[in-house]
Image (cartoon, rainbow, N blue to C red; front, side):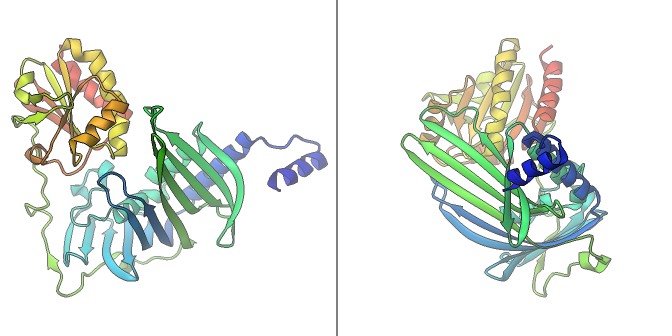
Length: 410
């Protein structure tokens, strides 16, 4: 119908109908303008997860509701509910973050400056992945088109894989529909993994109404699919939000835990000797860190087969291995998966030229204070940890690693 109306308009006006690429560019510009004009936002996000059992990971069927307030100046309030019962809250008043976890009956408070600007997602207390995701996507930078969410939207809309597929009505709102399909570049004939994102933008406000993520995994003749739906409801652009809206007092009886408490403080190995270890390899041998003492540099990476960012990092690790192995670099991947068979199956489908080990009991992970993956350590010839990277930031991280390697492989 949309295409017919455009053709009719084009005939009437004596001009060619806009191409799909032109329509996508127009949508991207409209979304960017909508983000630039935001200085405050109020909405409710309904999230539904439906995932079958994957290996050792249990099946998940879950519905969660988030009430979100945000305003310029890094003001943020996210309240999380499951079955209409609050289970956690994260509030930022621009200078301090307060976290409250109902399940633990604990709360903590810390300065925004105590968290790296590029890693505001690192929560100290609340461990719920959906709440953490929402608090990242809707932090104060969301109102800036140059912020993480704005850049993500722009990248999704303008990426070569993205398609503007038409319109659809969601909750009474007429929406432009954009879809992007990402296929694992290492997928083989016998195994394939694909992520599909579909976003629905209100044609009047150009703000998102719904996001749908579908993950498909095919192994031989069997396949499994997980879906996560985000429905943005009661969205109000630029409402009047007072400072009081970003103040949170934990309920009576909640225990305060200092952000400096040992249970929260992540020890750093930077400048310290890398702990030695022995672990089984996927090839059946036992490997020790001491086996690589003659190397000028070691990249030690903790990862898992189910971790998306870990798999995104792997092509870079392979490239660095191929480029620098003869100059004295060793790349070692330490799997944190629950069982070795999963790791062996993964690398039978997707071989890697560097060493792959399995941390069977998690002892080595604990030695290196690994709390999230991927986590990458650079170790010099003396066995000292030169630097560590948390997560995977793509080209920027690769550039950092190359800069450090240039010093060690001279």
